[in-house]
Image (cartoon, helix red, strand yellow):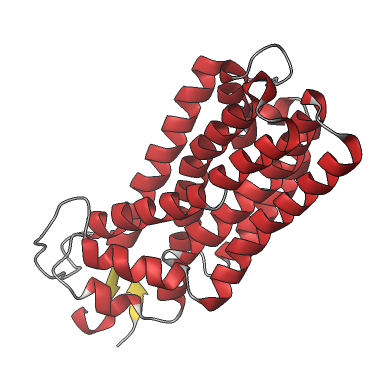
Length: 260
């Protein structure tokens, strides 16, 4: 039995959906188990650990400084660690199941495919937040003891970015078998490089949208973003909703080969 792609509609015979509409505990448990397996767990723990090592070294060498805290939290935590954790969690929530064909066992269950996507998105968001927002908060306190409210501001910014990144990378996991590669290119090239250098591209950067939230929460003018807060909130919401909707639509176009 294998998975094929076909237009969603009358030709695709699917099991009758029952159970919860948006969240399915069993799907969530299986997804958590897959994401926190040995290989992915090592990667998930490695990035926050690296951040904490970096900020500890910076604190030891430079002492407490608001500007330095902003530079490190923006330059590494928000622009590199958060999207990379999002890649691991978002693509890992569903991509491997599609690649190895294990998704057929889940699709054969009487569970709405929208429920599958939404449940996996919630798990991906939870994992991304846990391994990015919490370490960012700790890093901020290590760097300057939350001076100018920078630690809390960046932690909430990381949490907000986690939602959008989880949705984007979950969509990639449904769209392509090379989701990790595409996600890494997006995270490192677009968010980490182009989004920080090219002025016009910053408007379309999740990092800049999250920075707008952090800027609003931080005291003073230490944190800054090239995108206004209202536009950032709208763009974060639109990207999350559209990515989730399209992932669900794409998953509904997958059917069991035995149903043809």
